[in-house]
Image (tube, rainbow, N blue to C red; front, side, top):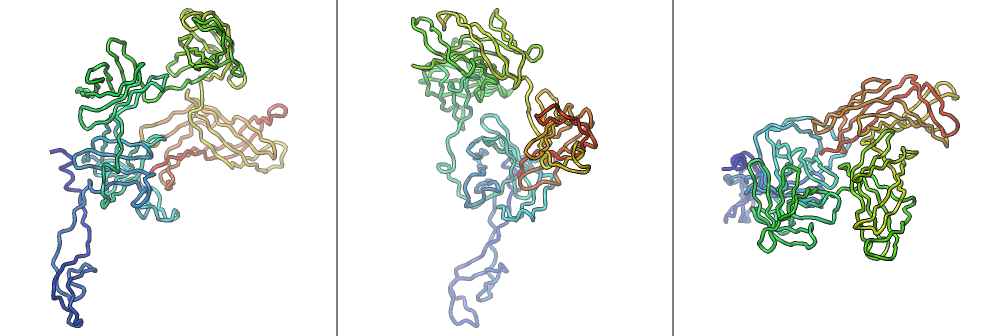
Length: 535
């Protein structure tokens, strides 16, 4: 017997009912009229009309598989903008979540799990916000584990008849929400469920080339393959190895023509007789693109043609550090052809170094706005009838901001040229870059003009082991400043992550854009904040 079946017996709750029994001839001594039904609205076991003992009736058993589970924001008789979860008695589940549907198997295990409870009062959110007590960390005795057919795992804590902080996939990422049971809901698979897929995969650099594997309750299912020249509406057979690797045997008209091997988050597609190809869940977009100035057209002659035509030239830099040069026809079929393929890397002073075969090209050093230019020769060959020289421009930055904290309405004093004690409003911004560096800047509103400057710089680390990350910044001037989730300050909209920076007469060079920057010994305190949503 499966573990979830063993556990289900413990998941019951008594439901109080109004008992009614049909019984002819019931008479109240003070009421000469007969009544035909005993009524016990106050639940004391006695007829409210004649006082006769009515006996007892077994309470209705509510199982975890009854009805459906709903996010608090949804609730009965509301739309499904939140989400719902159906736990079926056969050990499978179906979950709807902000236009994302998934299904698979479920298990309720006897393992403790921490969760965070926001006291919402009424289960459907009708308690006024000012009456919400805040957030409290608790421990549930059981953990609900959902294993989707695509291999993804979603976990929630089960306690006090609710599923707390249930992980749900949404278009924006993973959401954590509390779910309550609507046991009276009558689940109808034909109405409440839609056909979903195990995987939708594509070529890394071409989202138009896809393969869709439909989810199946068995080892057999249907699929659509558009990776080749001719689309295939076919079937598949699925097998799973002991190490968790899943192999799909793809069939066209019942005959295998390709395989798809899924190992963790690696997807390998092999057409019979061809080399394996790696697929991804979402097509890459070029990290950076360079084109001719103002995207002006370039006149070229395509191989096999006698007349020249206008094309747009694009140099694309991809996330795997590969680079290619493509041309797109500006009329006719508007076809795109790849002229060069190679790699790229950052050189000295932030320059861009491109390697195409035996040829190496180096860009200019980044100018204002990280703009670089590179001179390329597009060679004659399979695409072009003759070589073409082009100059391509674009923005290139190996280092970029990953996250930012912001504090507005910071009161700043110590501003040169103003009476002592005068305070002006300012904004603090802490930018965390992908290379582990941090920059804290200040902007002060001075009438119709803003003055900006760098307050402090340093490095940072981020601990992502918990549900909500913690950040520690080591500033060159202020030293170490840490930010941990503020559970005590939680609201229904989320849990804040604050970082507090204090400067006492700290020197900041402010630039107004008029004249040279002016160094000032400024004083301020700012609380910069992220907000993490949790339910």
